[in-house]
Image 1 (tube, rainbow, N blue to C red):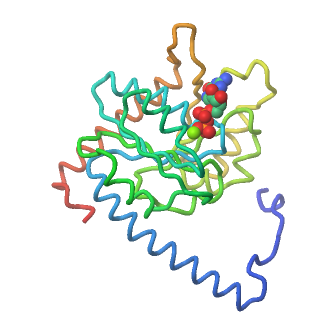
Image 2: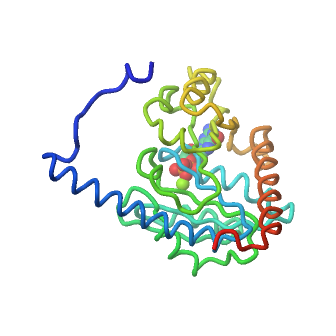
Image 3: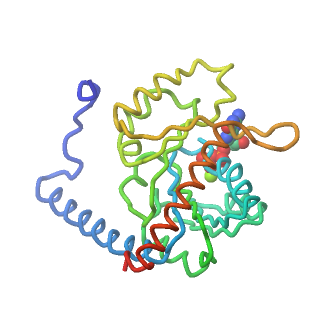
Amino acid sequence: MLNSNRVNRGSAGGSAGRGGRSLTVQRNALESNEVIAKKNKAIFGRAFVMNFLSSPGSGKTSLLESIAPVLKSEGLRAAVIEGDVETDLDKQRIDNLGIPAYQIITNGTCHLDAKMVNGSLGNLDIKDADVIFIENVGNLVCPTSFNLGEDMKVVVLSITEGDDKPLKYPAAFYKSKVMVINKMDLLPVLDSDIAKIKENALSINKDLIIFETSCKKKPDGGVGNKGIEDLVSFIKEKVKLKAEEFRKIGGNMYF
Ligand SMILES: Nc1nc2c(ncn2[C@@H]2O[C@H](COP(=O)(O)OP(=O)(O)O)[C@@H](O)[C@H]2O)c(=O)[nH]1
Ligand SMILES: [Mg+2]
């Protein structure tokens, strides 16, 4: 069914020769990215690392604002690496939570790569971090190609975006372990078909773990809802498992 929706746009490389050269350059870039990603993984150590992907505005930063303070209140240490093409506005939001954050400004590049993240690690105190969140640049295409050394990619899709997006941007859903369906509070005023979003996403990746969240603040300022609570529990469990695994192998596995 998926193939019938695909449009064949031919080679992006022009002539076969130029296309071949460009593919070689791309492959080399991805191979050297893998080498640095492995180094990042070693530096991350026992911290559990989540790489958040989504379209701009799906709620990546809002999710971090909802989750990180809860983790902090439960004694877990979080750190955030922000990726943005132009500004440090998202870092400012994380700073307001009193959580260590570093902003990578890509100057127009549409994704984070392992080298950019590696460069950030000397500027962010992650020595005692239990969990590190990476907010990637907002789009569902380029960030999917780059391993940053994370433990998992998390794709965020807000219900305003349409149930066809998993089919249109399959790599983001195929490469992620978790999908967060955000802005669930808007359901009463939208025609979003949550069952269809899930069906489409699971047709791309049958193992996706799905959370339904709302980051909308309550009158008391809190954002507690079952989706956020479930996501926090999931992260806590992963933090625990990663630390155990790290202890078991004496911290040497990734070197
Ligand atoms: N109603 C509603 N608005 C949300 C929710 N999550 C985020 N937003 C709003 O969506 C906009 C974009 O959110 P942001 O976290 O900056 O998205 P990002 O670009 O993915 O980091 C902001 O105005 C948020 O307040 C949600 O769950 N419900
Ligand atoms: Mg953001």
